[in-house]
Length: 282
Length: 199
Image (cartoon, rainbow over all chains, first blue to last red; front, side, top):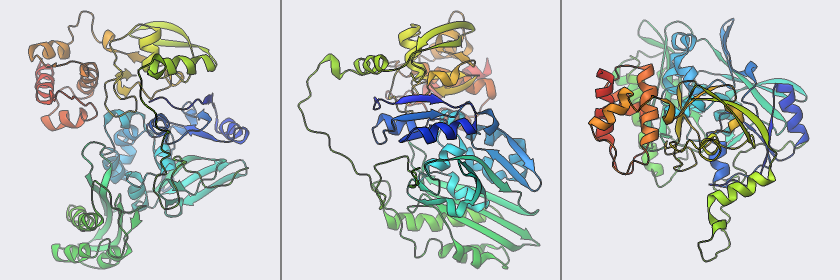
């Protein structure tokens, strides 16, 4: 319960944070601290310097810019649950955020911290892939934007380099007639997803125009299920078509096996949760 | 600059499994140096101190501590507000729950410098004489068994009722999920919150 000795520094702005990062090798950014500090106390991680970015107020806003919603990286899960803009424009995000951890985690944990941590059982990766979000990253060499699909690279591994920081997540406002939902089978204590399904359908006259289905928790990283999406697009959204599409969910994907659930069980749950998520949208 | 891919769990290898380094085996003997407080003091001695202004239970407090000290230990060790309990220390159990700006927050993983200038409420500050409706309902239902987790339970319950004055059973269970009780007093906790919500 006691972390290795580390130095603690505070950054008041993004540029100060980047400067401190450049000056201190083996340093980590600290946001809400609900993943990083427990891993440090368990000695799974022992950075020698923590750079506290929690007071950078410019990273705390949710704004609408044209056809996009820009969520600052320090926005907490609870703020996303309660945001009117997100509730009305991309309800799947507030629904998903309300299912993260417990109330204390949601009050502290941030969206930027969660995706930088890239836990394969976290909820944000699946949701953000389904809403086709973009991650805004700043580094010493400037600003860049990465499609969330390319951002997550594996277990606890992202596209971020050591001298970069996430400043925002951009989410395109879905077309009218789009409905989305996030449903998960969770580990009952931690509430991490054993299998989670984030599904979003654009429906016109009962026909699926566009489908986005992402499975999280089940494999070493969340994945868009292109087979399911293809099986739905252009088809009438009825129980039979949804059942047919759900049957192929997760096919060919190497699922994780752990003491919570074997790979074949996760394979089964993937189909079940895909079907439940899709059925709730018609 | 180091352009290696970042990974918070620095001991995770490419295949995603954790490389546990087995500690050198040794016979556990009780000694003061094994206790968390000893390590805490050692770490404190090695660290830079800072003057931090806190507003706790409506009162301004000034503490001279290492800014990374968890709020929990500032409350318990520096301000003698020992109503807030140390449970797991890794944000799992909820025993250390306090309110930051009215929201239920775990104090064991929260560096004190993050709460500077914010309104902090601990169990000592939720009522004058233990007469908050939640506390009265707790007595009425005789909720506590061993009692260790109850501070955290009451803090989460009062935060819930502030946001949602008449929660359903399901909303109570959802809101209280982050507080563990090893005596399993959950049904009485739920009943007491119901009683408090009606009063």
